[in-house]
Length: 376
Image (tube, rainbow, N blue to C red; front, side):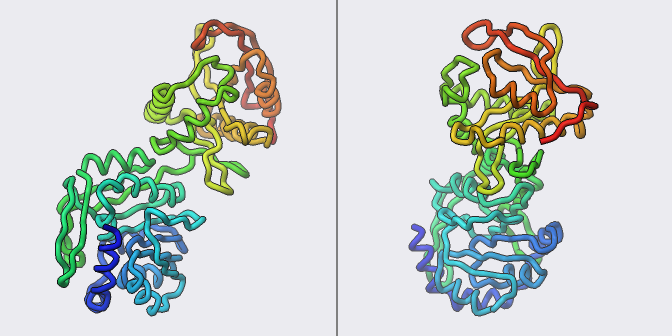
């Protein structure tokens, strides 16, 4: 199906290019661009012949990458010789640029993605976006597939229903800024759906890491952590897929309720999720305490990431949550975590027994006050 869409666009390329040269830049694109930082990196998905959208963005000083599956369209786009712009023959489902984008535009393009790959397409777009990045797209709002004609050539279209689109965006870490049904405007005409969404921002940044809220798209990485007995030995419990989902849902609930929880730990150099770290409310005897917690994938142990993330969480608790004291609850035989706690200025305060999955276990309570100096 992708090949037929590509072939059809290649066949109508000249007519398409001539037509697009007569159309003004869309007001929704102008408004969108006005919300971007100077020199932002923008991916134009289904850029076609490069006019008017990529051309406008390039002339505003943005760094533009235009991708399209149709070779003839990319040839036309390259002939524009736009500053700050490159054009590539690429499919969004397979595109691996090696960098993140501050914004992605998919104007009248992603409805050509096969119906059974629509959900994957949103996942791919999420993986290409920097934290806080903006995503604008037009689409259909009813579930299904159709084929229609344009300049005598057949084109395939598909869409998920609106509720599923919203759900899929949220599962992939997007906040929907607005979603307009039956959008109509002079420079654009009418579209069934116009959406602008924002990729959730990083919560904490350190030298090598950033922490962000987890979303459904992180399930596999989270499962790799929780289902490794060496990583989760302190729990003395084998985590099933259902357990992983419960864990993930609990963090998302914590974000909504408290504004914090265990966050995805992302390695800046690769944008890979290498663990989780954050702040949670935990029970200690007859009261609740704010605890720093973390778990790292096994192949990222002994590199200082746990200490770096814990330090960042500690600073966040003091500087953003205005807490006077923060804690760590550590199993009595977890020497590595005790060393991390000590390195960020904590000291052992108490010993107590707490219940986990398989029974009572001795734990140490470590803590640090705001006034105690700390360093990494």
